[in-house]
Every structure is written in C-alpha cells, then in structure tokens.
Length: 115
Image 1: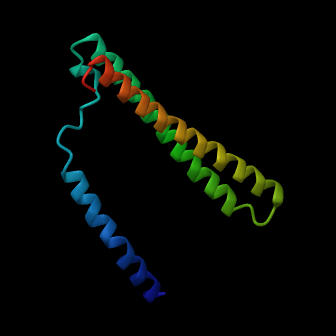
Image 2 (image 1 turned 30 degrees about the vertical axis):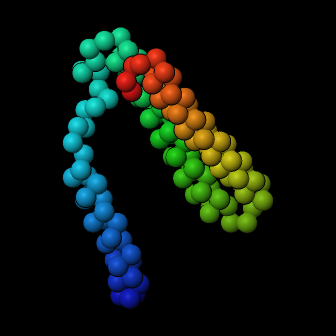
C-alpha cells in the first residue's frame, strides 16, 4: 500500500508544481468582468465570452459524467450505450463551442473590435 501511495505522489507532484506556476502567471483575473466594460462592444464581448466559457465548462463536465457512467456500467450494455452516446454528444458540443469561439474572434478582428 505504501508503494502505491508513493507512486501516486510521484505522478501527481509535477502536476502540482505546474499548477502553481500557471496560477502565478495570471495577471488580470478580472479580464472578462462587466465592471471594465466601457463600450457596447466590450459588453457584447464580455457576454459572449461568459456564454462560451459556461458552455465549454458544461461540455467538459458532461465528458467527465459520461466517463463515470461508462466506468460504473459494470458491463450492462444499455448503460454502456447511454454513456457512449453522452460522450459523443459532449465531444460534439465541445467542438461546437471551440468553433464558435474561433468564429467570434475572427468576426471581432474583421469588425475591428480588437478582441
């Protein structure tokens, strides 16, 4: 048991160190807050980014839920099929969110919004 805990510790320690560096590099955490919005385009940008962030987070959460459903299906083909369908739908949703983000950025650049 002690060796398993040591292996887990060795595997997780680099992740903790990277997370600390990533957290330390955040310089402007309020970058998508409505407080800073000074124009109509800033408000639109903020709302769009909040919506895309929420949708992306929801898609990732659903991927995790589908994974848990798949692991706990215990060989039941109906539960396994349902988990696979949810996983497929979640991945499609995540791709749609990423494409929507790219479209928003491209349209913002074309219109000169400076996003």
